[in-house]
Length: 460
Image 1 (cartoon, rainbow, N blue to C red):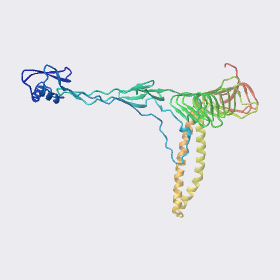
Image 2 (cartoon, rainbow, N blue to C red):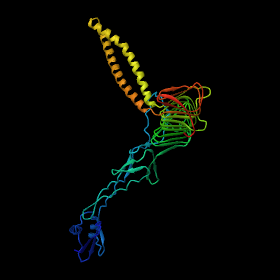
Image 3 (cartoon, rainbow, N blue to C red):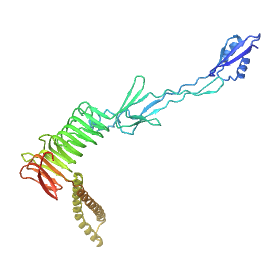
Image 4 (tube, rainbow, N blue to C red):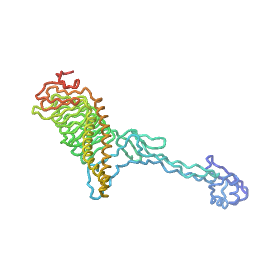
């Protein structure tokens, strides 16, 4: 048989055979045995061995075995959980508020899982010419770029590191870019084009908020135009050019800043600051209500503040009814008065049904009562028990609230820099002042539970 040499490549991916003529032609079976004896077991090219046996080629290195190459696995990819707003189901004959169907942004909150980056998978393994396993190849990593306020945790979750608008873009090559914008800017009005706004960050509106629309934000809300018979709620500050409430507009925030406000409901945890005028407004609560613009005025409405109410003019020469309360926490006082009213109603009802109960009990002892009346009596007793329990509980609350109100009383002050007109009713720590004539440049305070009027001096 011909002399046979076997050579395997260093990477074990190919086996080569070289025949050297010695006068005898080998069979394909003999060539196969030679390969096996060299350890080559996989990827043998049997057709090449048969060809060499039939038509030998000498002194030439010929590939007689090749490895099965490993395959590349599936590429990684990004799974996103919030690609669009959840669509509301519309039922037959249901009244539709189109203000709720115009929203076109996706919002997330800090710590929320936005999606998941799936790692690439390993492909099918191969085998070298010795029959040994070649590990499969990993797929390409996911094409994703995490921008501002987004990060990936150890498990592959995409996490929001800030609240705001989720923005997702896809490049031509398939790369997904993810970021969170903390500020939502509306270029124009809040109307049917935008729908109601609910945002977990800061909102900037370059136009106005049109009637009956709602803007809610966890951060500041800046409105370059006006709020028109609309509702605006912020956990921080609301800054607006003007407020035209139409007795429906409602602004609630930590601080409220505006050039003017008219016929609106206002509520602030800290301060309400108006530049020019507050006309017929209802301030539910605030620590301070300050109108610091030149010739600023409060006319009409009911203002409740814990510490201070101040403006150049309070009321008007026409004697427009204007109420101002300071020195007591408005929310505590409102809860206190509500509980007193509820307790009065419950006590009245209890007095009304008690004689009925006593009368029916007397009839039971005399065996002069029907089954239906017994059931009615049971209802009356249950009702009386409920009312009595509620009255006792509310009386305890009233005592606690009265104590809290006393503790919350501050050195409240009402300041009219230029004029306090008649028609204005001022309560400082629940002591009333109703001047019969105008008072010029005054400070109104409660000292030792008596209303005191002092001259206002600029800079004091």
